[in-house]
Amino acid sequence: MTSPRTILFDLDHTLIDTDGAEARSLDDVLAHAQLPLDPWADRYRAINTRLWAEVEAGTRRPDDVKEERFRRLLEDAGSTRVEPADLAARFADGFVRHAEFFPGTEAVLDALRAAGCVLGLVTNGIGSIQRGRIDRLGLDRWFDAYAISGELGVAKPDPAIFDIILRELADPPRAEVVMVGDNPTSDIEGGRRAGVRTVLFDPAGRHDATLADQRIRSLEELVD
Image (cartoon, rainbow, N blue to C red; front, top):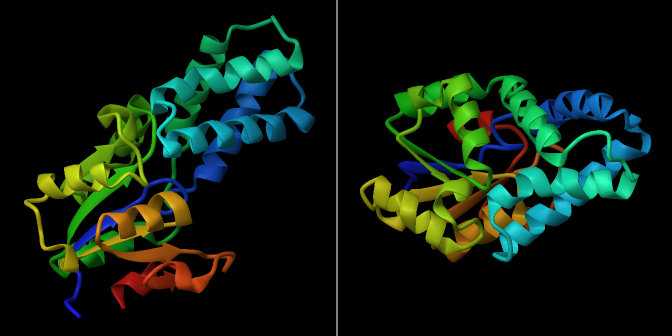
């Protein structure tokens, strides 16, 4: 089997600690809205998960999620103290400001580039937020191209988003491409539908190992 020379990465929960950034941002947003963390943090996550599932299904645009999740949250809480747009802006600012790599990620990206790999980022996300995190974390040091669903109007697992980024990367043979991500639906099913090999990043071992061509518990395994 041909060794992969082009590696496509997911961003959230794969390269960066999205849960940590979300928790810190949500603390600020709920305090501003005068809503207690219990139960409203969990309620927010349930709403957010449902909306992003609609994005993956192609029935909602990514940028619609930014404000709609807070509109629904305030509606459920019966709160009129603040506007959804205010909470959305606060959350977006915090989500960018608190973005951090998982430990060891930079060393892995350095090693892959040193090995001659071409790297692309394929992410389902809101354009302004993802660009802010790309800039904050300096991803241009490693990545040759980005495909952000909020900018393109198409989201993983639709193979069209993979077609877009692979064109940006000079259309490498798909046998030489691998998609790395944590989500069995958007990343792994999406990669499979696009005709590329797949690696499931599953640190906790929660998913079926047969879902992807390979499952890894740490990004360091990619270098091996």
